Image (cartoon, rainbow, N blue to C red; front, side, top):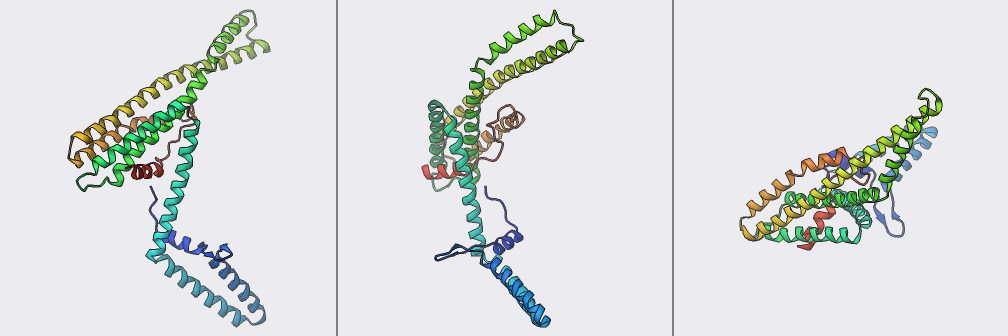
Length: 289
């Protein structure tokens, strides 16, 4: 969601404004003006100090008036907010596209099926003249975002576990344990082999942990799919929009534990991103309704 702007945010935006000029593109007119006044006043100060000081004083007053006038304009403030929202949506679209390209065809179709179900929940919740609020759309988009991140993470873990590293590590551990039986643990060779063995054992523990993580992710993916299916059915059967709104809130609150787990395991699963759900997903649901 777009952030809240303070008055000083608008002042800074006004100072750095780059209006589009025909044939020139985006030009930092205000900065060029400030620079011009500074150079002109400095040159005049050397020849006639009172004139140079007057130029700077008038230039500073003009700049202050410009900043106060533009930053207080509701039209300008709305323009800055639109630019911020557009930038967030562009970034979110890139994040979503990047994750989707990493998925297999089957998992991509699985995500698209869930996205369709979320778009089907919206018009039911907004019937009888009651529109889905931005809060509830955000709740559905959060479901989609977590689902997409977990799909990508599951593929990462499957690739890791399918690489054959498990059997190779077990074989190396057994071989080193046998070799260490004939080595002096106080000698350099024995210490080196023991250190290698310790590393292999840590890798083996990480593999076991990855297996548990994958099972948890698959369980959560199925849970999210069933929750969205239930929301869709409840939207069809219950004609009270407030009831469905409450159900959406309840479902999103159950994701707190999942979000916490994703944050705590982000180091293991590099594709996880604990940032906010992309606004582009909410926009897509609005368009698909």
